[in-house]
Length: 217
Image 1 (cartoon, rainbow, N blue to C red):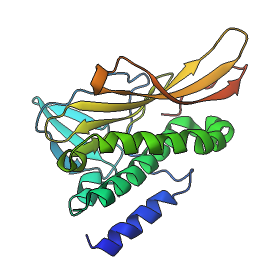
Image 2 (image 1 turned 90 degrees about the vertical axis):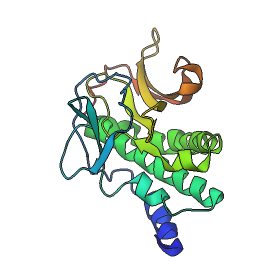
Image 3 (image 1 turned 60 degrees about the horizontal axis):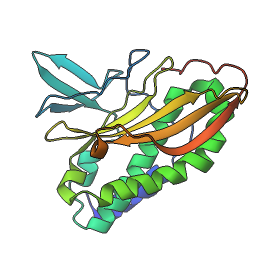
């Protein structure tokens, strides 16, 4: 991919509107699995709605959303600064689009603006820190899931290592209901560094006293 094409890609994905979504898959209502992937999965692009993992004969087939394909985008980037900048823009746009898909119209109408104002800037910093802790080849091998959990499930998306299938990063949203304080959507992430035990909060957005509807997926 030529340099000017890569720069154009970064600009376009960064300017993507909050409501622009091309849903790539369907998940079960409460998909809270770790999403373990067998080693050396086979990669293909999705041409229709499908779950991100499809297992057959113990082999994993991982589907990517089209046109977002991180490995293809990253493959010809040789400068580390440009690689990290492109990854941060890509990951932030992917997180935004998958979140919008998960919200559905009712939740998005109420939390869409604060998500853009409070969650997105925090995520950019998180993704920059995450990428800076990895070598270039590992960044290029990252694999994005695209199917958020429905119902009341927390999962938004996960990141895997494309060569080993190792689960590295999870971006989730939890429904909190403190006594007498109404409901909040707590956006947070987990990492493999502590075996996903800690919750690292990005932002908490108030919903109100009425029970939120189920996630859209």
